[in-house]
Length: 90
Image (cartoon, rainbow, N blue to C red):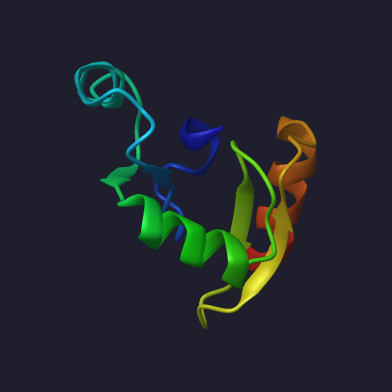
């Protein structure tokens, strides 16, 4: 999906917490586009609470103003997220 928004005003951020094995995480991020951050368990729990998410992985779309526009702990499919992002770009 990242490739379909290349050159547009879209940034993909991927978060992991300390439960993700660090060596594996370091290896995997080399294969994935976007900005990658490894958070402490406390930081991740704080964000999950703030965004009302219950499990991993979770998906959050923000507007340019930083406000949450869509958040789910269930993957709704690439088409769903592409449509949501395209709507926000208008």
